[in-house]
Image (cartoon, rainbow, N blue to C red; front, top):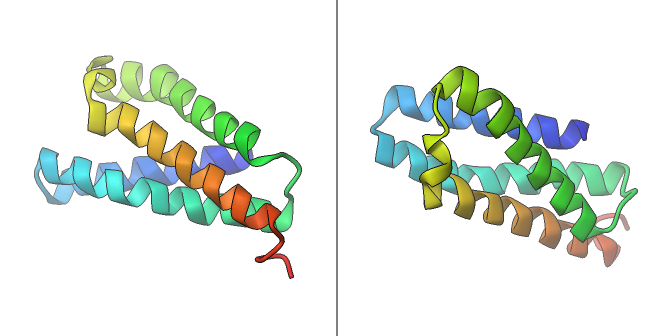
Length: 116
């Protein structure tokens, strides 16, 4: 859970900074590129150091926590709207990319390559 929280926070920082320095559309694209990379790095750390769970449950936990934090913190308190959940690239595709990145990293680590 801590790794998923760090992932969420870093993704939030990425989109927050991007919104400050560029247009909305470009910020969404930066976030869509950055989030799976951040997920890869965070999940690689998790799998190399802890590796308590299989890739699919880990990816589900990461994404569900991110969705819960977006719905419980970002939308009501920062955005003051749930409109963010209507964006395919800004939300749903991004959740899928984070899932895929975390899952594939887990598969790679389960093969033992990074741990040897």
